[in-house]
Image: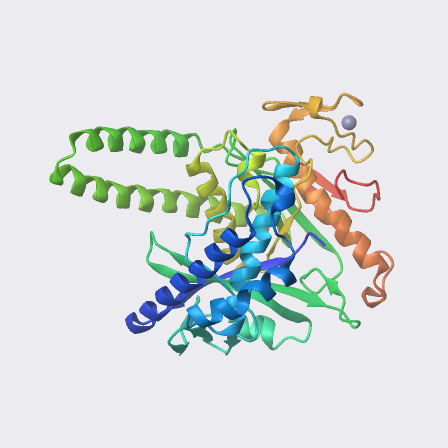
Length: 416
Ligand SMILES: [Zn+2]
């Protein structure tokens, strides 16, 4: 199932506990990198080790002895590294350029044994015992505890603690799944069977495009990122201490400016969903975004990830949930529901022209519709086959420019 719900929550961490979390992250990264070394082979992908159980059996006791990490965190670090190696092996098989995964960002995966949720705080295992940061939330919004833990419909799978060096803040990305009576996983929904979806395509031509046909071009974003880069280049050439200090200040200003920019886009995007009565905003999964968009610069990838996080953080306050779907072929597929022809030749840069039915449209708008449709179809199918939803007519509709499309069509989407 390619759909999951993510919520991002900021944590209030005391100075003392910040140190404990940083030291925990350091040991966690050590375990992940050790595991990567163990699994990786430069010779051939067939030499790489990708069996989680075997790798865990080989490394677990050693890493427990070498670190102060709690058992579950050692296992999570091993799992993270094996998954990364596995992903790289898949790309290697497709003859893409690959290198051994290394881990530098301070992010740690917690499950129900290493993280306990309370009404207004979370208790996290660290190398110095438990710490209990509280949630930083708008006053009137339900806490993650109220929203998910008290609910019988949700199950915590994992939460990821992320340190954002730029803001010097810790965030918890919480992943939940809705569970039905049999314990089988179904995607989270807003509690009523009929839903309306807003699809979002992220890209280089336009930063974001919605299925309602709204474009966030991002031209000024690109322009200012280039300007900042130029100024940085000049300062670096000078090489003096004063220039170095000015460079640091510039870096902070740039970071603040970029964040502000993405916040504005995120607000407008949520407003677009509210304005069109959408219950769900759907993005593509961003995991392999660098491979899929080789022309994307680092500041694009940065913008995509922040934009998703900000929207995931803001949307629930407006009764809108945020989902991700697998990105396979959303750019090459014709979004006309009676067609759906998928071919590389359909897309030329910003222009989409279906080689089968002749549908011509902006390529990013076409992709945004496909992203929304992918979610709507899966969800409709799921609702109809679920005895719990009762009504056989449960439907998920995609909001498009000037109307809606329904998710009833069961034409397979490439890659499903
Ligand atoms: Zn077509």
